[in-house]
Image (cartoon, rainbow, N blue to C red):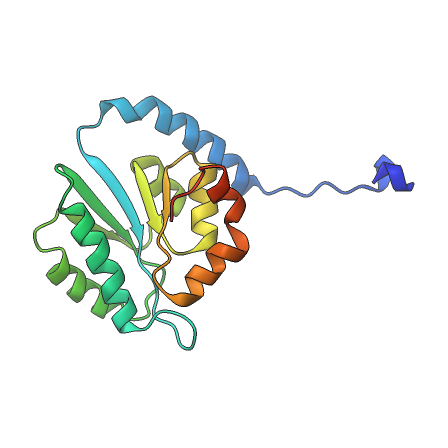
Length: 168
């Protein structure tokens, strides 16, 4: 900005204390990863939405795919993070059925920052959660399970894919 004549005293620096926490998470994770015998996977549960988003069939397919993948990983634990209360009863009921042979837990009120500290891998379809997980140093899979999410990946995450920072 100084190149175009704006002096330093006119430049406002905006930051968020929320972003400072990512460095702390990254450091905490690095210190504790080697002491685990269980692979802890955090999956952010897709919320029911109308129109271009997830319907109940999409949500069920999403969770079945995650559960099927986890069945192949010995000593894995799935933590499911709910994003709100819409269709919570459905989520809990179907998760119990789909994940009946997989160790899992469901979290609703625990902040993502705390869950990032406790996990080894994040699976999500939500861009903000994906960026936060990546900033926290957590290996991340963007599960683009519906057409809207596939378009989103192509439009907004190409550079992350190109540099190997994200798997889809």
